[in-house]
Length: 234
Image (cartoon, rainbow, N blue to C red):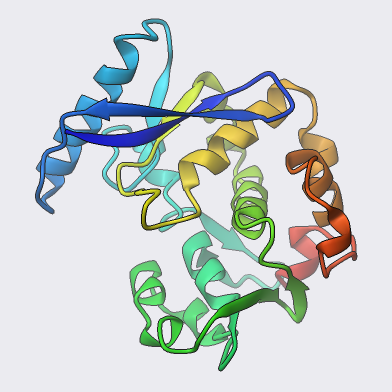
């Protein structure tokens, strides 16, 4: 047995509820084993939430939409026609004590970017930078969720379809080992849309911080400039 979170869309200010669910986990790295675990997790959640519409967000999802929404597959195209995945953008934006950001990671696949040795050997993560603009590492999920949600909003077909669902999982996400989760980001997106807050949240990074992280002390955030993803990723 294992426990993994289900990110449930909320109508409250917190935007999502993280519900930990116990389910039968099928060990192994094969796609078949991953899908068995996904089905087991979903069924365990649906046992107590029978009317819920749940979607796996990962490359192992049985739904085409879930596969496309994987950060490995969700693409960003800049004004200068450069194209790269959310995952590559995230990894290439990391600034460490002894190096980074490693912008060359935008030129490789998502998997190569995530596994680049420099990300492990450059010391403590101290910031994120995109196009010379710096983001604080606090709140811990701020930059990732900002990046993912802005990227998702660029895809009308995906952002419209995802509104049908109200709960999301990522079988690859283990909260004991990771901080950021694409399923959480999608739950926030849907909640922002349902509450009529999405337009304001996407106006700029400060607005996003204020709406998505209302209890965060903004005086500790080192970035105060307002800009959109279109301004940064050129």
